[in-house]
Each structure stands twice: as C-alpha cells, then as structure tokens.
Image 1: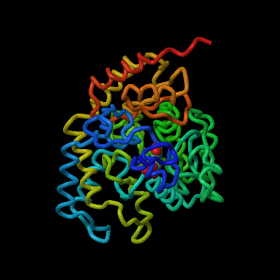
Image 2: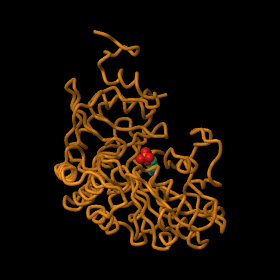
Image 3: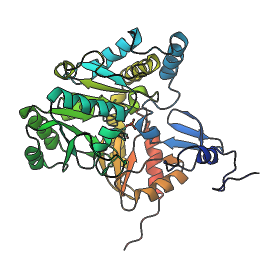
Length: 397
Ligand SMILES: Cc1ncc(COP(=O)(O)O)c(C=O)c1O
C-alpha cells in the first residue's frame, strides 16, 4: 500500500488533505465517516461521544430530523437567491431571531460566519458613533478577519496585518475600576464575550458585565455582545446576556445559529440601524434560504424540545459528577464549560479520546473545554465522568 510522508496510507483523507490544503490546522487523530445524535462514527469502527460539537456548532447534534428535513425541503423548493430579492423564509428567520433576542435589538443583518458578524458589528459601531476607538476584554477571541483580529487578545503580530483598522485597548477581565477608567467619550464600543469561549469558558463576573453596560451607556458608547460561541441556547438562555440581565446595543451570532449550515447574524438596536441605508453593508450569501431554513429549525427545536432546560440540567449534572480524576473545578455556564485540570488539558483530552470521548482544549493550558450538543443526555455525562475517573492521578510532586 502506498504511504504518504506522514506514514498514513496515501488514500487516507488526512494524507490527502496534507498534500492539498494549507497546513494551518492541528487535526485530531480520527476520520469521521458519519454522525448521529451526540456520536461520531469512524471508518475503523469507533463510536466517539462528541462533547466538542465541531467548535460549538452542532447544537442539535447530528442528523437531527427537523434540521435535516428543513435543509432538504428548502433545497428542493428554492436553494438560493441573494438579498436582491425578499424571501419569506428569510423574513421568518429574522422575525424568529428577534423574538428570542434581548428586547434592545430589533434589526438583523445576516452574514456567513462569526468573524464576519464581528467585522460588521465593529464597523457599524464606528459609523454610528463617529468614533474610532474600540475596547475589548483581555483574553477575548473575536475571529480572524482584520477588525475581529484587532480586538482579539494576543493577536498583535499574529494575523500579519500591518496595522489595526482602529485604536484598540483591552480591559483586564473582571476589573470594574479599569472599565470605569477606560470607557470614555472617545470610545465607539466595547466588545465582549459574556462567557469567554476560546479562553477556556471563563464566565465574566456579573458586576463586571453590569459595569460595562452602565459605563457605555453613560458615555454614549455602544456595547457589543459577541455571542458567537455563548449564544443560541448554549448558556441555558437563548443568549448569555439574558442570564446576566443586560441588554446590548449590538449582538453577534454564528456557529450554532444554523446548527452546521454556515451562517451568522448581527442584531442591533433601531438607533444603530438608523445609520445605515441602501449599499452601506452587504454580502452575497448572508441570509440565503437554506441558512434561513436552518436557523428556523434550530430555534424551533430548542423551543419544542425544551433544550434550554436540558442545558441547565446537564450543566448541574456535569458540575456534580465531573470534578473527578484530573478535574479540580468547573467554570463557565450552561454547556459552555471549562474543566480546570491538574495537568495540561491536552493530556486529559488525549486520554479521553482513547476512551472514545471527544473534548476540546482552550487557550488556557490547564482548561479542557466542553461544547457538546444541547441534546446531550444524562447517560453521556455518566460516560464522561467514568472516563475522567479512569485517568490515572498526576504524580504527587
Ligand atoms: C466568541 C467568538 N467570536 C468569533 C469567532 C469567529 O467565528 P468564525 O470562526 O465563524 O469566524 C469565534 C470562533 O471561535 C468565537 O468563539
């Protein structure tokens, strides 16, 4: 059998991707063949419990009948038309999204990804306020396009742009005094993740988030909630800001929004929307009919299956059962959780994977990240707890 330079059979998708695509992703050591519910099945016969959901995307798990039927039906009737025409399915998706969102946002601009949602949100904030300074929160992650990268912690020199498109400063997380000092009349907007996903599911304090809202209001700056990872039910409410009891001026969504069909959305207040007219923003694919049908299917499934209650119950179960083996504590909210470990999370991730449980790592070396489908079942948490308990204790130093 022919083998590739990395020792895999030349026919293996890993070898073929390595030979044809940019080598920018560290890939996991298995190849999914199909998936159903919360499980991934591989060609070599493994059945892996997926607690990572393709970076928090698979909110309904895999092969969910309502999502499958919605995509199928929409692709048979009208698979694409751009924003050059109005569509009933796009209007219904916008209406439904606004119905579940905080009352402060009343307009939607559909896009295709999280970074694109943030890119537009930041641009909208600069235009609406006429200001050029954005504040972000240390350790936050907002995407890899120019503006989104500019407000991502640690992106200086990381994404290769020669300069940032606006002035940026970072507020230390949970530092209310620093927030009060930094939010001034010069600031167009503060962008934040209520629960910082990539940072390890770090949930900001209630006081800090309330301070961000209070200070931005006082200085006529806008508050942008990046709910790309924390939103769409993942934190036990449709959006995490609803659990914090605050209302942002702009909210961005993507990832779980379409349950796996690529899409994103910027939601904003009437006041912000009033600054934009024909031709001021645009995208070819945003709000396409298949994405709109998927958004409707995701929201309707969360509602009809009472998945918000399930998220809160599974969170409680994980907190009760999973501080075990290498896990010392749990942070985060809902099913966006960080298991703080006594050793590098990558070691725990690898041990779990040997036991057919897939979890994620994070920017915090000791934090293992869980982003499972919202349809997670009690037996799945039992499986995780057993797999964690089976990991040998770290040697006492
Ligand atoms: C909070 C947050 N914002 C934005 C993004 C970027 O989203 P995308 O990868 O869809 O561009 C991510 C991706 O991980 C994210 O976690």
